[in-house]
Image (cartoon, rainbow, N blue to C red; front, side, top):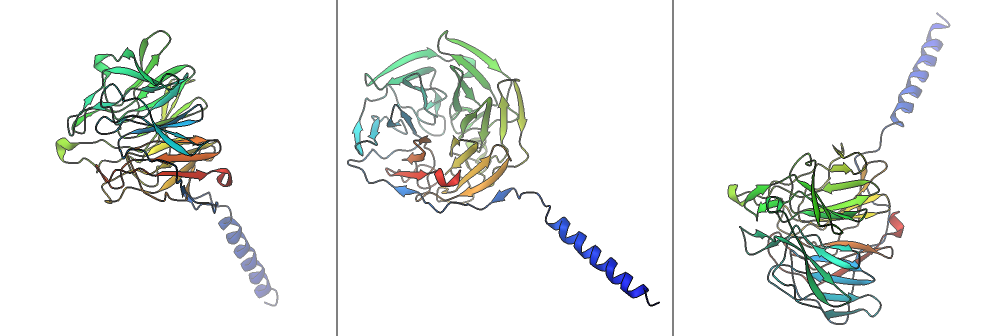
Length: 342
């Protein structure tokens, strides 16, 4: 009996130690908090762009281009070297709901709509804006059976890819299509469908992989225009021709967001949803190595229906709508330095 209780004490201590040790070996949570202290800042420039939404915003050769949106409006051009806005050419027709693609010294527009809600019409042709001449070109015709708008558009190895979208404006006709367009030959190739249809989203490429995050299945037909948002992240591997779906879903479901790759992170910015009237200001980053989401500082102004990009270690986003739906249309330009978040 003299040795029994000390032995129990030793076993109790050993057991407590083993429990504490196991608690330290937990996996990373699906969403972690930001590590950076920097914030988004609003750029006060000389001049101001036109207010617009469902537009594109992209960079080519050091200058920024606001293109399209509801109603036909001339291009607005921002020069970060001079901090000035200027005006460019008028598009050949109203073009909206598209992800502009800088490609070989031109800015391509495809997978876009024209016309009014809810039966917007897919633009049947590929257009390109040429900054050097301030002119538009009609580049190619899109196969009639593959036309849609609100699609993701990316480039990979000198070819252009159009992903998902919706055929009948905001009404119906969601598709999971993936098409390859070769500007050098004019050839279109149908590739394997994505795991699910989605529209009102933007694609992003890192390495050999194409990422589709956010978006929705817009359905004015069933009076569910905003509600059917998608949280799954689908990934296409160009090297294998296969799709997969990631386990960690987009933390904040929303459509009309912009997607940007920064090093090994997929950044999803802004958007709209049926859960709130103000446009989303959330910025969430997926670590493409650990496949863990991280919260980044929010936008100064929530916005959807526009585009963002990375330029010289900073993210830029401009225009868009401040509430879900069509307004208020914005003119502001925001910047975020990403160095602290690497």
